[in-house]
Length: 121
Image (tube, rainbow, N blue to C red; front, top):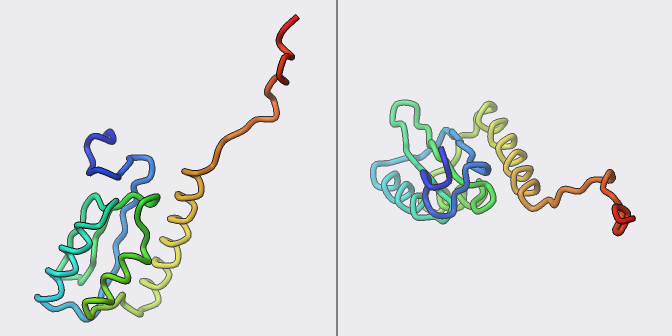
């Protein structure tokens, strides 16, 4: 895939996929939550599995973050599940998102470069 296969604001190198179990989902707030998340800049894809009550979302970690998605979920009366496995995944996702964002801003350097004017004789 290339960057052209994704929505505006989503780069392939920064794309992450997250699966979070939710609580307090009704038919009314599910549609509202999905619509609002889908319109957030940096979101590539969002869906909800009714059987497992799991939110599936793919986004560019440099333009979007899990905290922003949680705010949308809380605003509409739902919450991320409080079980141990979901809490562990949530913390891991936030850690990886931060690393993706930091690495995207990092300028690589090398100490093995020739000094300025060192290649001229």
